Image (cartoon, rainbow, N blue to C red; front, side, top):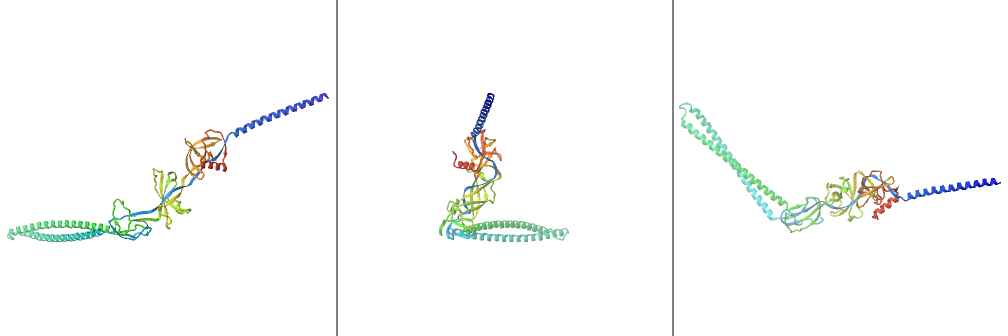
Length: 433
């Protein structure tokens, strides 16, 4: 009985020792797991997104102004007074339509004087031509006499070789006659040349008089002012009887102003960053305050192809077809410019790009370690923004960039969900803290 009691006691003791040992081991393992979990919970959780490569297609609003395709102030080219005016502000006119008649009696007198002088010099020219013809006839007659007397002289010389056939005195007399004829021919030739020179001079006088008359007639044609193109009279500053003055510096108000408005020019100043994807013929939407809620369209037609150094913008003209006359020159417009690029660029959420006094940057996260990467901001496209720098497509960046995340910081990265993106966007739009 005693032996059995001792055995039972030993068994109970061994069981108690094993139980206590087991409890001790479980307590130690639990402490280590708790410490590991606590260490992980101490790391900052950073939502991350992947850097994407996309084609920019962003819309921005630009101020613009509608201008008439042609805008011409009409001035007078001659002095006088308004004899008749057939249009007023708002008149629709056609090309070649008579607008104003100016009366200038002095110009009429000058034109009459010019025509009279032209008639006089034309008469002198005809007389010079007649004199030239007369001198040429004299030359023909003198030449014929010279030729006849020379032939007679030559025959007498031949006959004089036969002794007693003809007296030498007759040969000498004929020789003198030939010499006189030759002198007369030379004198008439000089007179013919002088007559020809006179004809040329009178011809020049006629040409000069004709130029004067044509100039006066052209000036007379300026007394009637016609519309240079189809358009609308938008300004009138004279009435019947108004004195018309010619100012070389054009310091006076125009008689009329005519504008072509079936086609308008929409001029917008496009920022330097938005001109690379621009193409001729591209259709651009715009609105005007006068027609709230209505959309209009223009076609890119005349880029300046040069930047304004003061504003770093390029003036671009759009052709706006306004056949129904809805739009008016001078209206302000809001241009919905579509910015594109001829190549793909890298995009990140707008909240992923931040700036401080040093630079603009994103926080790249690789293997749960952060790295500050300097970048340049581009254009926005929705909630995304272009980022150019030491980035690659497929890199991961923090949804919300902050200078608190230094390079080399250990974090707990997780893919951002919609709530993370929405929260970061709201924080960015609110200006952060």
